Length: 380
Image (cartoon, rainbow, N blue to C red):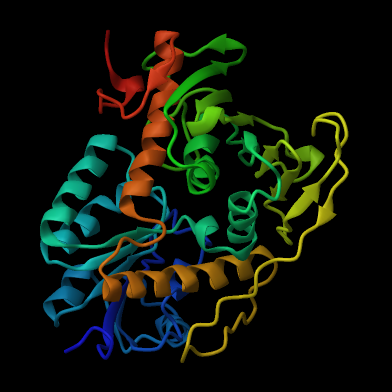
């Protein structure tokens, strides 16, 4: 059957009995899309399962992933847990069976594990998209278009912040900074090198000095992170996260500085794109105006988006998860990589590893990394 006429059979792994499921609404990504049949919802929690199946539009319910896969072939598996440790096994099974994947971020905690997934997926012709939703959002697509058109002149600097809440520092860099670092790559291309300063309680971190995290996400360290990335064309990019800064309001966001203008987006409820034409540098005088966004992409044949009881920033998740899901289907039809691919996620994890490697060696670290083990776990 031609891929243009094919009905894509989708399975949703959304186990509400497990911690760390998150509220990013990846389980709704394929709901209402044309040429899609959501054949099954995998959820070991039977309490209220009918309502969850109805919301997703799932045909059947399964208590385990094995039960879903043994019942018949599927084309795409959606992995909804936000914990990287809960991605490894379903990713392995999907790739071995030739099933394409839409996966919540961060993809995995280990770079060597991501390397293996990339290699195996390529060998088997499996396409993996990762829920780095900024690439699909109109606000960042508009910003990318303006940068490409030279609307802010030549880009010279990129500033990104994590959420800077109780997880500020290394945990923030992995959990939320992954979005910021991925946006840096989306707007500027992959970085060439990194130099970082990572501290805990004012002292430089050391190998093995890992933090206890709110969720099991793998090794992280430091309550303050400052990483400076070198991109092409002499563009410098900074990522910063400090613990306990949220009392001053929303911190998470990006700022792109050009020679004739500055663009900025905060990850608040509205997520507006703002432009400054001030002749002063952005840290001296921030006088911004809102920028009209590109028209919303229309997916032919898709049902109207239904937000139900979801509000505010959750609309961002629903809208852009759908766009990511549709992009994955289009990528499969067209024989290309999705806009937020597994290789993009691989680069972001390298950026995080590189920051730790720089801190621990006291030197600039170039990409791609030769050492694929986590720097915090390497014993001198």
